[in-house]
Length: 358
Length: 122
Image (cartoon, rainbow over all chains, first blue to last red; front, side):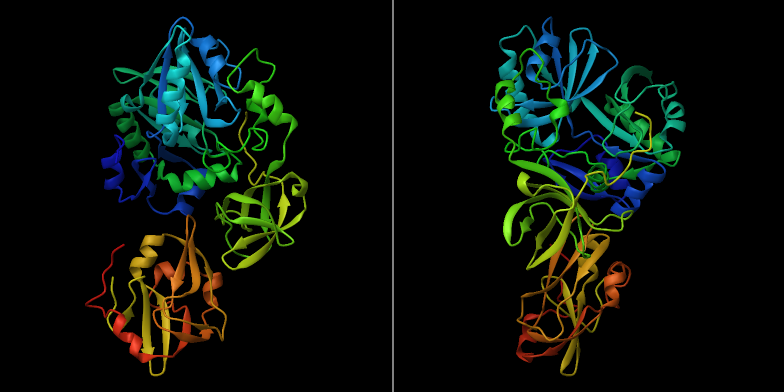
């Protein structure tokens, strides 16, 4: 199993470690609930060094990436773009962030669990273009610092001004005797930053952040936070058998773009949507979980993709992929939990309202 | 922490025998492995449950875990206070009994571990 550069730091904090995407990662330090609340009210730092980073370089970099991913990638050295990596059938192999870091140099940030698959796919597609593809995952660490207080702390932590970044933009700033990439992005529904850099830089940043009271947070809280903010997770809301339209990700698929992988199939998917990702809440105290069956009058109509009983929400809530015929708001459904069909009702997916400027 | 005077199942439930009845709970190791317990599903009073069968479930934020009855029993009473304070299973696992059962077959005790034999692993 692989370890991130912060592995020893996690052990020092007595983290509960689990295997995730072949990495030994912290699931929590103090507890998922405490860490979740800390990010909602104060600040938390996450080690997300398991994420994959690929660098696309060459004359054709921009043209290639626009062919490779579903969203429009502009020649803009400040913008971070969320996109999908689709196969020829228009199904997502992954979701990713795209950074044009320099002219002819584009960074793709992919999910840890998909990076081997992604690298094969990207390398194969790159053959027709004047580009090279390099996997930089092992050269870089990444942390996310998230929470409403981060904007007051981040400049001091990095000893430079990054609090002027707007949401979904980035800059490369000097740090120690080198540079780090800082982007105003995150996966929690809070304001925050993600920082990429060499291992020793990120270890220093981690230690400094903890010293000023940023709480270390594990993958457990990362999942509860992203779920509550209706941010999809690959393997749950996004998968190779769920179209971008069923998952509610049409905003990241630009069919008016000239050509991209999976475009033709997506035109068809858009016209033939039979399932829908919906929010729901349980009407009894229990916990809906990934993989549980959704019923309507004893008939199976779908599956729970994620569900939780959160520390700052009074009802158990979840996301489910259901037959579109039963996907309207206020539809009464049931979730099969062990041997019981627990009543639930379909609602909007906004379980948490973001409080920061976009 | 392993408490003396209790019997333990390999699946990390404890049994406190009181004459023809017994209290059932989960071990310190079980609560530690689960993390913050946020929900418990209790058995129905009157249910007859065989040794090794699920009698309820405990859930942390992250995961649901079935609880297995260490011996065959009939449920006489459940600790419904735990429904509103499931975190007591974390803070006081040996003081937080989950169900009181009528012991149906004392011979089944032989398959359980005492505090010297019980292992906090898996």
